[in-house]
Image 1 (spheres, rainbow, N blue to C red):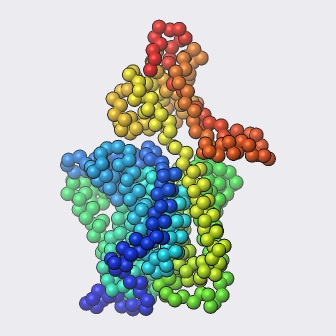
Image 2: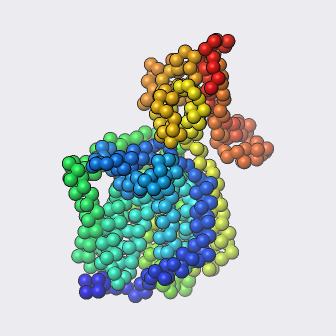
Image 3: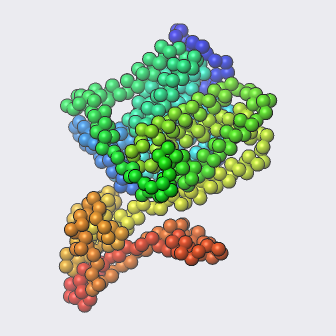
Length: 541
């Protein structure tokens, strides 16, 4: 390292970085269009609180806001790059559902800003717009952005780490500081989820075998990461706990994670994924399901066009674009394989593949520019790009099935009732946060079989079989008796959005049973009074 902080072996054509240039990119029409698409995607795909992993992040955030030291007691509560922003949002905006989701939206938009800035400086604004438009509208990305999610937090910090490393890789003037920042950003991503280790493998491998950065410079990446993790360890030590608390909780959680059930070949598992073979299942997930729209097919087409492009068309006027293409492509491959191998015992979920998909998107964008694909096939290219984004929006509509409709309906009904409302223990437990935000008094909703004459909120699909909160011995007492009075019926949503239902019903050549499956309400909810008809115990809600 010389006195200016420049890394040895500086490459020619390093993309310039200046605040004025960055503001210029962010004031462009292309960036405005990308943000408009992102806003539309958020509006169409908004999910909210889902009472899943976000319960851990929310409860940890509330603990951070209390006076005194806080020591997490579960690996879901040690994700500080998720829970701390939620705590800050609650402090600023109050304790309600929207405040919990705001940090994810900020992470999502900030990732798009990084993506646009990085690509527009290396390629051009049109390519940057296209990459942002495609990635911002992937259904699985929109879902992560509209819930309290570790996926989107990890993605932002990983994207920041990637661009800082790319800057150093290209020989930027502040390369040492970029490597320090890269390590710190990866540590922040690690505090959201540990799969960012894949990016660390890429960075270490690129430095050790890439001959761009001296091997000894890897120490700056390590120091940057240790600075963040060391500060956290110091806090845990001062709080009276184990300085290695994070790692003990994560290792304990990882050892207990084994929820990918065995499935027969060519079957659909309980997560909705097509299963053929463990080696092929992740590929089927990204290619065959709507979670990534047509994104991975787009990546394949771009790769084929790049491979078959004439040598003259592959001449790169900006060497940085070629470097970006290779680095992001290798990063996507490493991360994808890392997740597929390390999480092979965990349920196959699309959100685990968001980060490698971002890297593939960046690689595809750089390839489009390097090989002049958008220029040589302009009309067909932009038509295909429009179709890909439109397919993503269709996927967003299909993806957003309001996963906590039942709990929201229970909270809404309980808010209008002046007497206790009974329901099954599972529904009562998962409605706790919605009841809290609706300021419903404790005890208004009771998770047990209904008392004589009481109101009973019935979820038929949750009382036909035992679950982890409802034992088999309780099921008979939860069944609705013929003489009980129905107070209200609440239809569940159809599998398809309401505006598509009449279109499908009138469509020819589709069997009637398929139409019924897609257009009829998926079950219904009941509010009944556990009393005989004509009983004097009947009351109105």
